[in-house]
Length: 145
Image 1: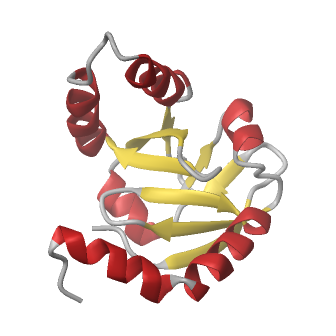
Image 2: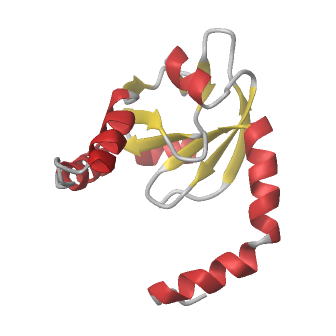
């Protein structure tokens, strides 16, 4: 499980340092793709395989299913860590997530998310204000806090 929040910078070559704890769990390489809410989702190869299987089962005849899988898979890229723990993020993914310099890397359970600091901070503030309301809505899923 991935958890925690880390702040890093993206260098001039578009590389990001992944926290060591996350690299250990992700393995030698990972899959990075467009996420929701204008961030990037990062998966281990094993977790990506599970997700891929689930997405393959979406109904092909539904336009929303086709649109989502196209968006998700067309943005995916395999990334490998160099000796300093950095991986290069493709330009199209950096552009999508507005990643220029300062970024926030968070653990989100089965995946890692990479956010631009400028996008993360207002998103986090808004979520923090409504955390109680969000938790209340999730009680329909039998989650015990």
